[in-house]
Length: 124
Image (cartoon, one colour):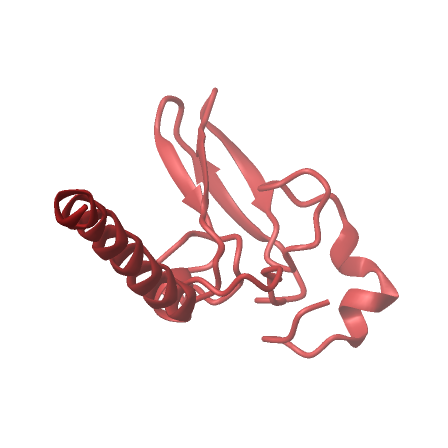
């Protein structure tokens, strides 16, 4: 029986390591539903270049709005940027209120009473 017990110990060790990793990850990536915050209350017009890949800020914390600067990671938001590729070169209005139903593009939601009453930097 001593041999069988010895075989089980490495599995128990791996389970404990997994728990340690899980608790570490929970500190960085909370399991509460992530919410974007209002970055600005008006869209930003930018020229997208055909074929170029962009990363639109989803969390609202980026200092390079409307694009991601990595703030989502350091602020532990649990959110990731929206990666998209421009199909054609053109001027577009990109959302900064983070409430659009057509991300990353502005759909006019920033004009709503809910967004206009919200504090910049707060979730909706």
